[in-house]
Length: 387
Image 1 (cartoon, rainbow, N blue to C red):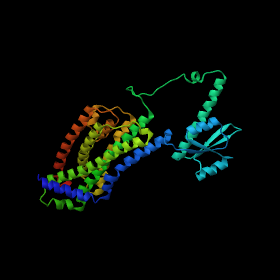
Image 2: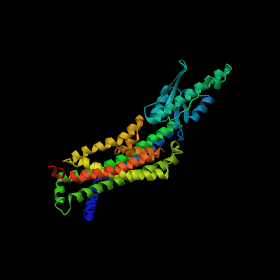
Image 3: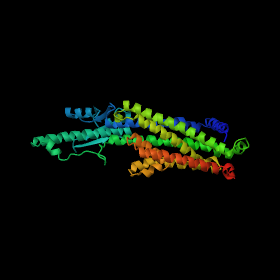
Image 4: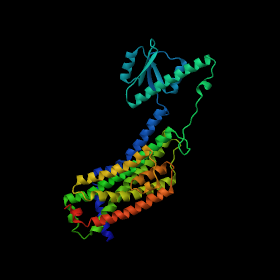
């Protein structure tokens, strides 16, 4: 094979794909969805935890006592008193308050009013928490009046949350792991999207337009052509993965200083290095799979449809993690599934060098096998010209 012919093919493919706005979006814009998700989650979790210093405007139709005011203040509720239910509804419709409580003294019934949007429903949940806290306060007063110690009355059951391997378990930790799983799934998806678009434009579009046959009349062999197209596809996938990886790590680094939910979360340098290596080998493997899936298609649309299977495979590791299905070491030799899962493991602190070795070694073997299959496959006129 002539290196010059391969380099010329790579340059040609990269120039052509850079004119494709859809692929450019996949490479440079799609990874920013990851950053948006990380920051949105941080904002929402801090809102739920009450650590974002947000004051929720609460409408009430009664005069709260000092204890109620104290509870409301702790829950970031800023109460405004109104005469009746109609006044509170008008204030709510104008946006002056985010939720309101109507107290029916005859029935001794508190009714919390709100809508289904996120911010207002959060304000309503704090309003409910305020009523529960005040109800507990009144219960404590009654118990003390009966000469009963509230600590004895309420302290009959103590509990703590731990994982099956003895580690402390918290909802915050679970949610951060969820964010990481989604983020690193998106990185592998970004590679697949970019690679499929590149492979489709590089092969299916050229077959459909009849330019592939013209190219083969030039002094370039089929082997040189397919290697050049493969490397160009791998480069596009690699660029997409590195951009996504950098944006993800940078977003987590910024988010730790912005949101309380990410406090204490850190990523080691070793994990970052291994993560880059995984992204590189994933890009080269997915490029080969993308070309193999789209090579038999006669049209651009057929190639796009064939490439969709990669998106389904990319999502599977995240679904498996949600279902908490136990996995063995052999799982790490399954293409694509292993790459997403190993990234999840790395950034949750579960680095297994056996799993890393299995993932990297199996990926290299798959790449060699796929390249061999592609070179043999492209000797067929049916594949080359869709005959």
